[in-house]
Image (cartoon, rainbow over all chains, first blue to last red; front, side):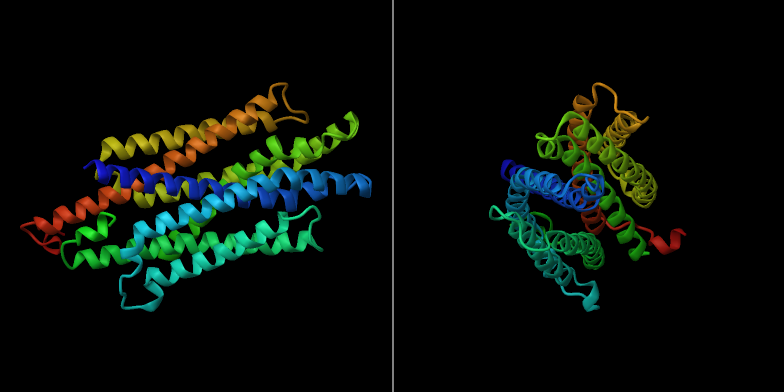
Length: 173
Length: 166
């Protein structure tokens, strides 16, 4: 019972951290890219660059912490749902494993872009374009996450409607 | 139907991202970026950012309310499986979200922010994190309640088939 409770606590905490870090990363990127530039438009070029550089320095730590937390909590959550992701489905589109694979691969790509934009003292050329691209990928990642969840829940209901659930499907191994 | 569920949840999450990420950025990241500007420019930039942020927050609150009501309607049957836990978590989530909305609307109302806007924004950020914690726990408890219900039904199937009842 204690081990089961500990497992549940870890998975619950991992999910919480995953969501919080994703919201901070996506919201911060959106704010950095869409709200700040028009607000400092009237300032001199040097001042604009200075504000961006300072904000980038502060945001760097947030991005790195969030990226590390997202990856670790993602691995923990995947471990918890692995049996469900491997369930066979009549329709390939309804198989949660495929959606998970798409979510994980796009998520890793978005995290890599975020980290690469904050590495080094000087930002890469055309940082705003990279941020826009990353924002689109992050929104896609979020869509894939919700689709993964939906297919996971639906495949679970179909599988369990046929008979009693295997303990390994509910209790993490 | 599944498509609308996914889109609704997606919009709910994006709106939460806008609110939480925006509050974090405007309270903790941007002031550091504006530190070396003179007072007049500092204030001007902050007010412009605030004006734009206000529009974003209003849109986010609207979307959160609409998608939140829709998601609740869809999951309401599941909330009856374990009313003590699920209703408590759902109520906590909604109440904390209402507090966060009220603080956001108060801080962003009018042409200038209130004096205590820094403290209120920090408080709002903490409340928003609690809102996510409540939502996350609610989702976990709901899935657990459904799984337990399915296991119980599979072990002890009802005497009368469901189709005959209807």
